[in-house]
Image (cartoon, rainbow, N blue to C red):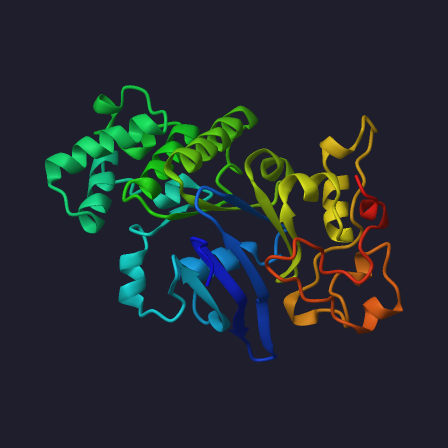
Length: 327
């Protein structure tokens, strides 16, 4: 086992139904080092949030982990009991959700929610917990934190609430933070502030971050490496600059082509035809081939090749050719 904070190997999540067993996560493998932000990107239904929920142990029944392993700081955690996993959440793994109102209790003051988390996971007094709570709010950029610590969630703006959620995720000093669409509900200027905050905290604290999003612009700005998911599997994995500037998988190439960054001033953005296939009706061969402009006969009969976590390459029989040219 490597020195990675989080190591996911051949992870499979299954959902049994009357018709079939669905696999929203199928053979996913990646690692995240201390102080690194791994961006996980893909369309809705790609399996990215399900992969994050599997790591933190929040899969809704009947979804279950049926294969692979998850290691946190060298310890296997996918086979822990519910109670052991509950103790791990908050202490070693923090979570930042898309809507801060779902993460904060509207009936409790912000300070009470922060101190409760710290008292649960850290061996400190209530006085010390309140002192640390104020420091945590200051660290995430809440103005006049000492006076606002006794405010309720509804007394904060959306951007300020998301900052409070980040403080809540970090207050017990976890080694891993999973941020699931943390900027989607915010306007562009606040998005940039939250991204900068995550990057700074990651750098200063050495926290590993799994950043889940559908926005390639957020990935390009925040992540060190990027994992591109499609139909439950990894399509591409590599350094963010390499993947953004020289995508190898046709799906990644399509994602980049549909962003303003890659439009080069054109009036219309390019788009990927069709839609993500339903899990219960995946096509034969490569799941992307019905939408792929490079698909050949092999793609229609052979599943795409396995992508190793340390390979930094595309899971594609015919990767985008122009990217194979040496720099």
